[in-house]
Length: 408
Image (cartoon, rainbow, N blue to C red; front, side):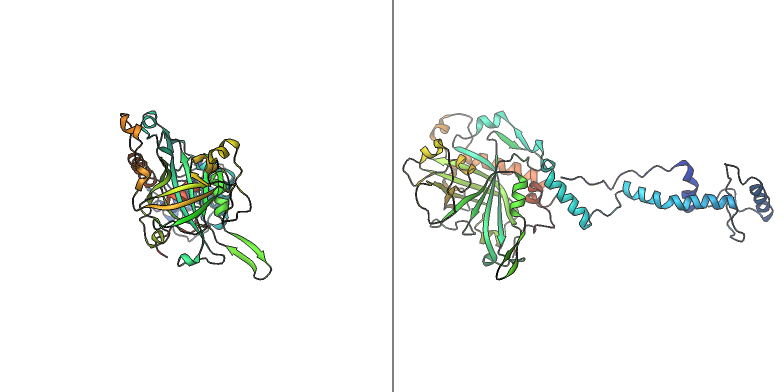
């Protein structure tokens, strides 16, 4: 992220040639006291005879009854000429120049777009060999999860789900053996954007909602561009404005496996959930049975193109229409998914232990790993400079995107 000048920067040092000018404006009268008329006359005569002298002794005239002599005028003119320059320098060094103008904000935004590396924080993801040895064998993937929605075209201030065009999930995988440290997440270029055509998540065990991979192996810059507002021309309505996406929640997730299914489990870290999150079907904890569709079979949802998998992934389908999700399928655009409501306020069957882990000493349970990851994420976001961890992690501009909201 672009750095800003500290308000506590030291004040610029005063140049020797200008010390008198600054002293005259702030300090008390000279200790020598107020001169008499005779002394003033003698001093003026001396100055007239030595006006070309480089030392130019300045005599304070506190009566203002007689004009300054030429030597004094030269000094005063120099001081007046230098004063605006010095004030400008002081403002620059003390951070007093206005940095929140539209031009400055645009410059910051351009710098973020050109240098996504500014968002990298190598200390945010810490390799831990001991943690890796303890990971349950049925956790296939873990990471950070974000929930977003995009309002309908022309709707700048949505007031209900009816004002929403589509919901989204962003998955940012972490190494299985890693733990979260401090700072914004390092951009590993492996984020996935899942689109939710139903706009919301399953709210009951009967709900079976489609989802698909809209972006795969994405950088933070890719996500910002995808979520940004845009305009397009139509023949009937002219220019239409597509609002920027709005964050809804942030947390941690794990993709786990059980003998007959795969599960997407999550636990939210931010914010404290309100009516907006409830309408989207987001809980403090939740889980879904998640399956991936074989592209050989017809689909009720047309995406224009099917996912193009390599042969080794195609073979995993055999002749089945659906198979339990394995994380590598999420790295291909147009992968079609089915989410079935499972743990609504709980982690459900997603945290069941594998039989072999029960026999192996030192292994954690899936629930323990998710809770540990959430604790680390809670500490991480609490120390971020920005109030909203999604804005900090993704480098979103508050000028472009609406802040996370819990009420309509």
